[in-house]
Amino acid sequence: MAAQQQLYGAVAVLLAAALWGTTGTAAAMAPEVGAVAIGAAAMGGGGLLQALWAARPLHRARADLWRQWRWLLLGAAMVAVYPLAFYGSMRLAGITIGTVVTIGSAPVFSALLEYVFDGLRLTLRWLAGALLGVIGMILLCVAESGHDGQAVSVVWGVVLGLGAGLSYALYSWVARRLMQTGIAARAAMGALFGAGALMLLPVLWVSGTPLLASWNNALVGLYMALVPMFLGYVCFGFGLARVRASTAITLTLFEPVVAAMLAMVWVGERLPLLGWVGIALVMACLVCLTVPLPPRWRKSAAAQAEVL
Image (cartoon, rainbow, N blue to C red; front, side, top):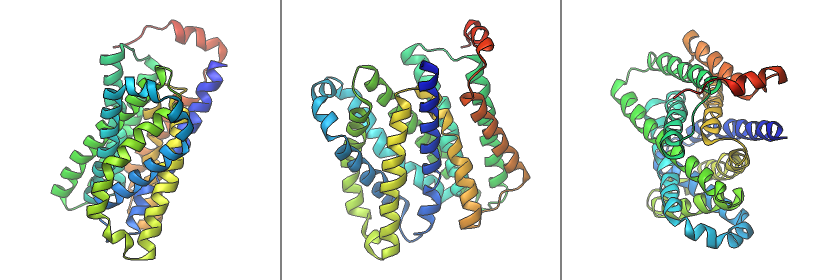
């Protein structure tokens, strides 16, 4: 039963990653709207919807959430930082590179958090899968940067992507920590994203005027809030309650694959052969992490020496 629940969790995280992979292409449909406004609208609107959807669980868990207010504040701050850094990275370095660096760096940050704070060790299977995914991310990044003449812009985009990856790992780890104290997944995610959305409202007030300049811009903002940010994070919360934070974040390496495909089809970004090799390695990573081991292998996998 535990293995089945983990599989359901992995599938939910993959669905979330697929929805998140559409955000870069959607944002490119409203080029006159700045990255800060897009990020604030997407995560701010999606966060408020998360809080409303979790209103009853939030009310029941209010005492438990108050006892964890320091972690809640940290997680909410990271929720607010993430979209600003992520969409800024995509605007500076391109959809594929921004997504690749953000999602590719997050598993490393997440593993370090679990190692330092939780004392959890990583199995050889997880390490092998993560290594395949990170190599795939590097190849994708190299393939894309070779076609971009604005080196300085790409460098700053990579820096913002690393910041986004760290903030993503932090709020995911905090969400998992809240759930492990007995707080329901909906309440934990609703509290984190609702508080993060409140932090983003002043940013949206200052920068969000272009969203109202046309129906196209408004629809892009509405889509970002409803589909990837609300529905995507509902799926992510479901998965995070069933798999470790480091595993969940590694599974979201599927996001840059979706982002790269959509960027080619809708935005016109080119992906050379090296990029396709990177995508193949990411898919191999996903297979390694999600396909259950045959029963006769499980005992040997459980008995294998842990690393780190």
